[in-house]
Image (cartoon, rainbow, N blue to C red; front, side, top):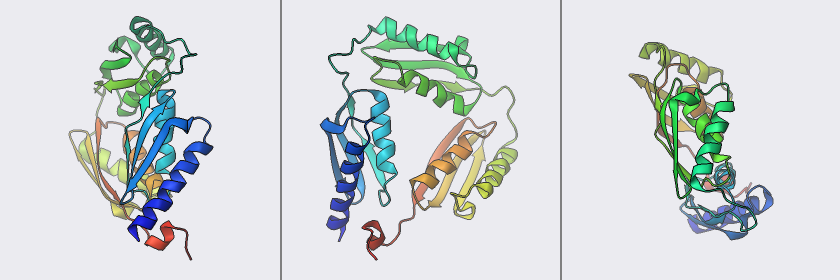
Length: 232
């Protein structure tokens, strides 16, 4: 039964990636082992790599996605040298009103970009990363930005705020998610029904004031095998 499920999931992933014109999946390989999906091959941009992973996670029944895709820019696209890439990223960060670009250092070696410095909110760490991913020439990012809130609430207040937000979220069964906060570091444990709920829970913690890090301990609680296959 597991083999049949894996084959069905593989077919669904391949179909979705080839459907999504943003991915350009001609050189993407998909393998599935006990509902764990591995993506290999090349894509034309880091944006395509990220979208391929998100597309895959949206398919019901998948427990894990391992993204080994490599970014290989088409020969028709002129790729800037490292110094130009770093300058373009720094400029893009300076245009975002939520980001204090003066506190972020950007360096690039062989297309591998490193972000260092500080931001005052956890979500801004990933906003800076998303901005950098959109710059031509970036093939991967090392995000070493530290989160230093200007004013951090007490851990109990952070936990209560997250729990209340989860209660309001229609994608999450709040009673199935445990929230532990220590020095602004949030650990989420428990179960969620799908990747959409997982993302909703993580976003809830990420966007909460005072959070400096989110540690993932959530697991997907799966439906019966026949539901994976769309059987009655």
